[in-house]
Length: 107
Image (tube, rainbow, N blue to C red; front, side):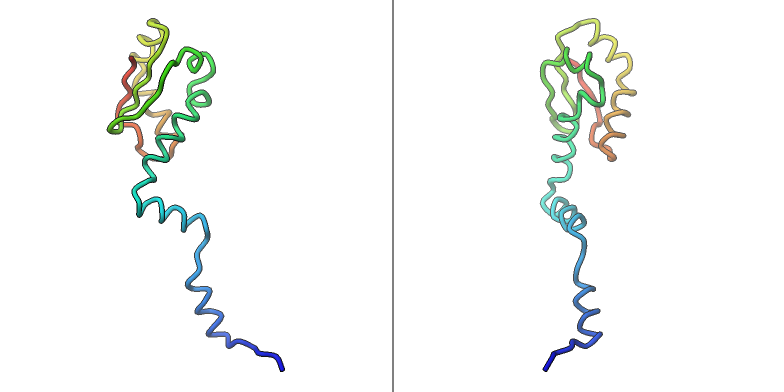
C-alpha cells in the first residue's frame, strides 16, 4: 500500500522553503556581516576595479569606519587619485552594489 500526501501538506511545506542565496543573505544581515563582507570583496577586487598599473603601486589597503585607506608608493599617482577621488568612490560603490565606501584616503 502506498501513502500519498495530501496536496495541502505539500503546498504547506513548500511555503516554508526559500532559496539558499536568500537564506545566506538573511543570515549575513542578522549578524551584521554583510558590510564587512562587501569591504573584503572590494579589497580583493582592487586590481580589477582600478587596473594593474595602479594595483602594482598600491602597498596597502584597509577599511576603517567606511573609509578606504590606500597606501601608495608613487607620489604623482597619489596626487592624481586625490584629484579624482569622487570617481574612485563611485567605481568602488558601483562594484560592490551598495554604499560601502564613504571616503577614500590616499596615504
